[in-house]
Image 1 (cartoon, chains in turn green, purple):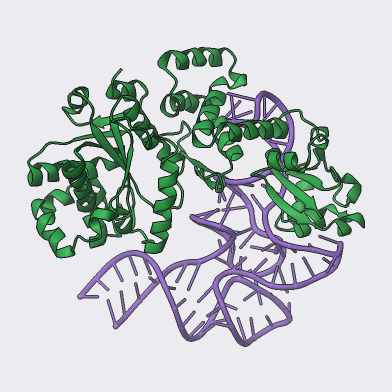
Image 2 (cartoon, chains in turn cyan, brown):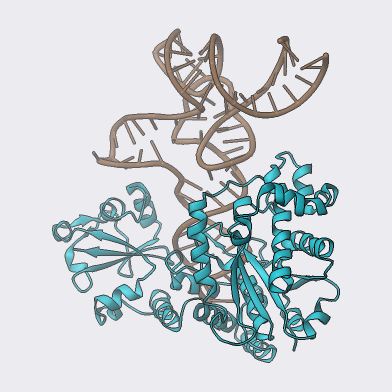
Length: 428
RNA sequence: GGGGGGAUACCAGAGCGGUCAAAUGGGACGGACUGUAAAUCCGUUGCUUCGGCUACGAAGGUUCGAAUCCUUCUCCCCCCA
């Protein structure tokens, strides 16, 4: 199966320039996707692009991951209704480094294969490109009329906020990237999310006008959620690929909690399973939806690819305890390291063992000694509402005094707000 | 420059001298149900040592009493030039 067919059956393909598929079928082709260093980590929203590159490489082509050290400094207006704040150069540099190390986990950059992946930073070819040279050599080739016709620009011109010259220039900068890669790395295709179509086409246009060459474009579908909310966001914010920002346990949970309809779409996009495997899983899932076979398969595969087999193992163990029937007895069997492993990614608080030995009223403990609740009033209300547990025992009395004999292994206390929010209190 | 309207809790938005810690809707959080789901139903949504305390753009004033009336200021919106 070729690359385009692969994306097509997985429901990832959004738009493709005529002739792209034919070009890819001729043999090994280089293609690139850009990632802007707007944060110090990629998040699940970037995963589609990463998967696109993985499929690209699996199909025998050479993926190029571009980190936008230069474009990130300008700010892509696509999909933005207002001017963006620029990040400092220093922040950008840190971010570029983080993105590089994250991307290197997903693709083969190391091997000697002719299609081993490559990473580039557009800052390298922009840093010595002067403004005058740029407007003479690049800007001259496109009309403002052409640039204004782009959706990303037009929407902002029609809107009330307007747009700066900087953001208006963005498409030229990204377009030049494509030209540069085409010229110097024989990169024939640029891929990206569907919102990137306009920027990509500016690139093929520049290649045609400056280099009299042809280049190709392909975009992927925006990931949607069946309930209409934005993909990749949870109550606590974005789901990051960096284990320090989103623990592997939370990451695993994010995918496990996918709605059935979403899981069916997402498993095609985010797993490398074959069509047959996926259809078999779906059949199994429909026969016993409550087992959430699709969600589990999805969550396991992505967690391993993003983090590791061990990280998945911990995430599974944690999930089993936190949501399974596991009683606190389970924790008694663990040593300190084991306990901390299970609660990795769960918010932790340190409390004084001495104070606990003399007894603390629950509301004081959960609001003042440990910031499980912002105020005692809230703690009290939540307890009265039946929403708080200590060591898996539902609290009923607001005035209950907690003492040291409740500590697990003489050290730990597990507080639960609602069903899903755990807090580990460590007494020392 | 002239005239008018407005600013209320996370958001929208009522209240227009006491009964207002402030209707209603949304959101958020919690409970029941369930598949750690969706839908639905229920509860909570300023702090508190449970005596009170602080709050309706800001600062003053009138009053026994102000989100409500007056003055000044700040900021928004609309209409006319």
